Image 1 (cartoon, rainbow, N blue to C red):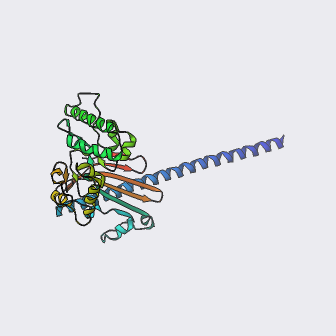
Image 2: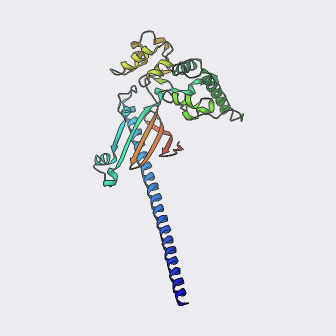
Image 3: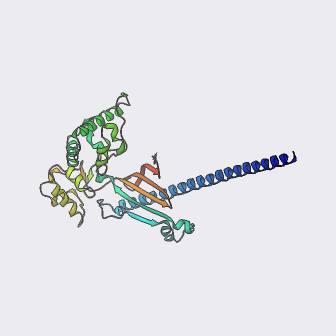
Length: 320
């Protein structure tokens, strides 16, 4: 009987030890998980603060560029991309900086670029005063044909955009009208397929107002599409000529290719820009946080219209 009691006590003790060990392991895992989540959230928050600073830096560059006046072209400081560099190198250049420059900071890498959105064709140009704009429809038709995209999709986009603008002007009187797009990926609302969006992404944009194409920053494909009488060889010549000297006026561009002077119009073409996209990327070990912003420059004022941020599942933050 005594032997049985001893065995039962030993078994109870072993079960108790196993239970305590399990509870301790669970508590330790919960604590570790909490620390990891807090560390990841802190890293993400700090990364967003750094990217906010990078956006302010980009806005400052664009503002200083506006002080000099003149045309906007790819030879200006704003057009030079920032290749991935250690954040500590930027802190070291600031003599008044007293921030931490430990090994952790030295492992943070920052990169980014500023892109002229008026080097692309603005989809909102398709509709003017409630009607489809014939000149811009012709330009977009040339773009669709060059990329091998169905013309039926362009017709659907133009008509749905007209419908959406009419509905907006009438304070949303029709529930059947599509919403006005604010981003390129939202053009699927108007009838563009995913494959067409993928092909068009580098050549089109959606801006809040009608905008001309900047001939100094447009690609060969966009130049070909937005100047009716231009062929691809002439578009390539026009783009190549910018390497030796940018266009200060539309007349400068007309000198490169004879016969296009009559095709260049202030409402469709320009040599300066007001809308830019700022892309920032911050990497720390396995954590990557990216931010994409659209800014509008009016004189010396550069305001942020909206921002997409995040490493996975970007969040949209519209700003005023």
